[in-house]
Amino acid sequence: MIDTVTLLAFIPAALALNFTPGADMMFCFGQGLRAGPRPAIAASAGVSAGGMVHVLIAGLGLGAAVATLPWLFDVIRWAGVGYLLFLAWGAIKNGAVAADAPNRPTRYAFRDGMLVNLTNPKVILFVLAFIPQFIDPGKGSVLAQFLIYGAILGVGGFVVNGLVGIFAGGAGRMLIGNPRASRILGWVSGGIFTALALRLAIMERA
Image (cartoon, rainbow, N blue to C red):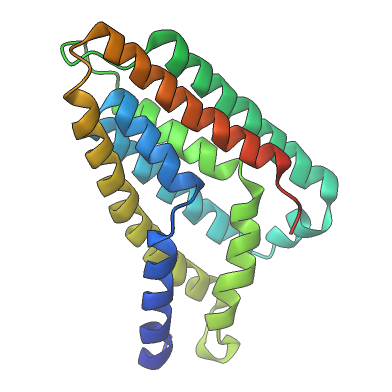
């Protein structure tokens, strides 16, 4: 379905994009800093799952609606802004999670990562701009090709963002024994989420 030459061209491009710092990477960094490595990995998995939903939507041709209907773009965008600010408030209010505190179910971190990704309409616009460059309608199902390329992006993003979250989680765990450091970490992660919300709020439509 996908020839080897095209695949070998796509993988380095996808990896370069995965290593480029962006909103998803910063979200996983903030999640790891506040809650530790395991929630950061779950958040990274949620981000990748959200990305696959965007790929599926783009592959089905529904992404054009986001690109052409300004009000739909803004509804999704402001929902994302609100959710990021909600996460920021929780981080600032509660601080970092103590090392001896009961583990919060990782499904919540997965959910947060997925929702943050899904409420960023720029992701589907990026998918519509990037993946079709490698699609060949003569090679079979366009949707299947979208999903294959999306899976490559998703796996690479999961590994890279997960490693960033693990690093942040390890650094955070060394500091949260001190209540003041825990509070500072909460403010730092809250600041990251707030910055991501502001970035989403002021973005222009592509």
